[in-house]
Amino acid sequence: MSVQSERNVQIIQDVDGNKIVVINDIIFKGRRSIDWGDVEKYLKQYVGEFFAVAEDNEIIYIGTELPGEYTGSVYTKTLKGAEAKAKANAAQAIPEMIEFASNGAFENNRRAKHGRDAKNGWYRYDTRFALPVYGEDGEIERYNVFHGRLLIRHASGGKKYLYDIMEIKKETGKSCQA
Image (cartoon, rainbow, N blue to C red; front, side):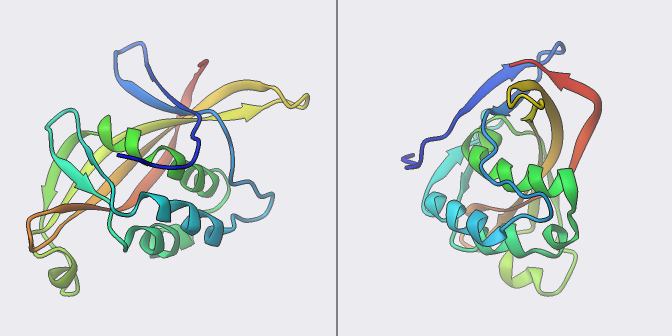
């Protein structure tokens, strides 16, 4: 693993002992919309890397399709506001989100086109991450916690590839101090 850019990410545990990936910097900002082209460029640094899920030792590869799918999927295009900002900034913590993913579950292909992309089906894993909330003075007040699902493509060659992060939701009533 040799992801080049400096990342300000740490791992904490909630009161129940579950891990949360804390992303300390908001690098993709936008009052109105996210520049998904910048996010796509950022994600390209991960292509060719692989990471292990601690819970089940599955190896997840980062293929060339991740940057385009992550930023241009139908799901991404529906995102607005906090969820769009959360997905864009989650790109900084891909390695840790894979490592601390949980509850892996297999899923068959839902559409004919998936037979090409994921000959052996899909896996979904839960992941949690937190992003800072800044006060008027520019200082971090707290962190909002988000839940997401990693979508893993199981290719014909047997390798598993991160395809997208979906179902991103802010956990209501949950914030943390890092």
